[in-house]
Length: 453
Figure 1 (cartoon, helix red, strand yellow):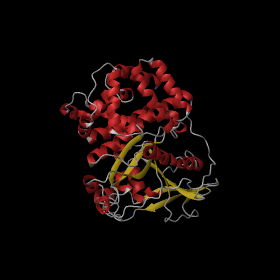
Figure 2 (cartoon, rainbow, N blue to C red):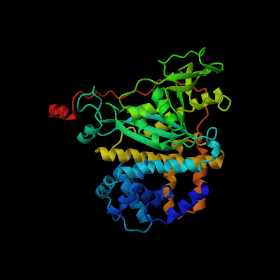
Figure 3 (cartoon, rainbow, N blue to C red):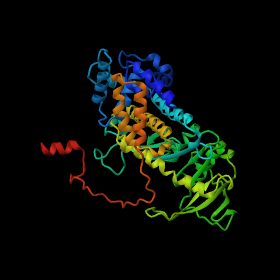
Figure 4 (cartoon, rainbow, N blue to C red):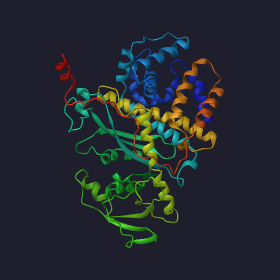
């Protein structure tokens, strides 16, 4: 893995375009663009350069177009090339021409490539586990964004932000995003379950899906199982459990059969008829004794029915690792500042969303390198520490530093930032810093300006 990375860095050092070629080669970008690259017009902002500059914008703390273009200008000057204009107009025009399909394909491509190269030891029972979770993001309050991603119905016009729902499929082994979807926050067929059903093609037979109880419905389990995909999910609190019934496998561990419910409106009669009349699942009660955990016991449901091959305690430990999805979303929304996007049209918002995921996958790649070289697992390496280190090191590629020295120093520095192991840590949900006492908007900003005038 380190050898291929060193070769990519060596090639990027000779590339006059931008240092992000070390993480995302030109060939990968052109492959994702497909035939669209043949229609691209640009002297400086070719498809690859536009994507690289967009990535540098997503991974910076400033997130401004001005800083992203300034970084390109500085890079070309350091390489002895003619610098482009520092104005952002040409870059924004090129960014607007990025096809959504290409940005989406780059997410799948970067996520799958790293998982394919990862050591087999990082898998669970030699199987690939996918963790699914959903969240929301907001965007600037423009008419175009409001039309496609309306704000909450309870908010008055001009007092809220357009909001979108997202669903992300992560690799449990390496933490990369394998697939993602974005849609409206409210309305028919806009829930997380509906968005997830659009991503089933990303699953392969033999995979294991790890859910929270939001996805514990009969069809949410049966549809992946029909594709040869197993499921581990927390049982919904409204579905009763009686461990005196069914086929007993051990203490608080049994097999039960769930009958098929009536056909939902969103499912076609043909798809409904193809599903079995009964779904055999395994239920296990997990008792939580650690201080600070809110649930004291929970019931985990799985289609991994072989108790010898998959012991109950190992499935319980696997479900506990579902929390990794929450940490991955925190890295995306808080560390990469994806919680509130900055583009003013829906097309650009979606591209900004996908490019954040691509940048996240690239950081996960160098985290995996640090984990391999230090004998750790990827989830033991700090995401924020890796981002800070990577941003500092990428600018050095134009200095003529030795590639071997650069790679070894980068990987060693990233491996140094290890996440603390605090399994019994307990922190009350309280904050010390008080918010500033500004009043909330109750009408559009323009109304307040007219009153002040």
